[in-house]
Length: 115
Image (cartoon, rainbow, N blue to C red; front, side, top):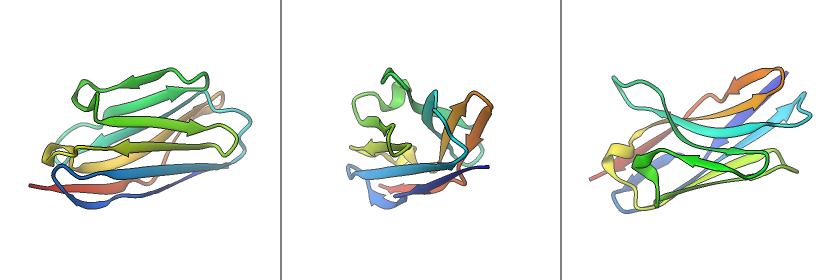
């Protein structure tokens, strides 16, 4: 059984910062890819950022230069530092991990950016 616990969401004014954290636990030997996705009301879930076990990072164009993803392999955690937040960043943010046996999602954490 694999569990993901997310934290760090909340309400922030435009231009502010938030840091999301996701901790994975359970039957985990190694995690290939860890990432953050988001889903705004009425929109499809989209990739925000991902990071491989070797540290290779991918970002959505809309967050490049503002968001930074990082991971701690020893602690099986992945963080998303979000700076210069915009109202259009408002969404439920989900953590996702890819293992050899499949992929797993967190329960989601709400991020709301007020203008």
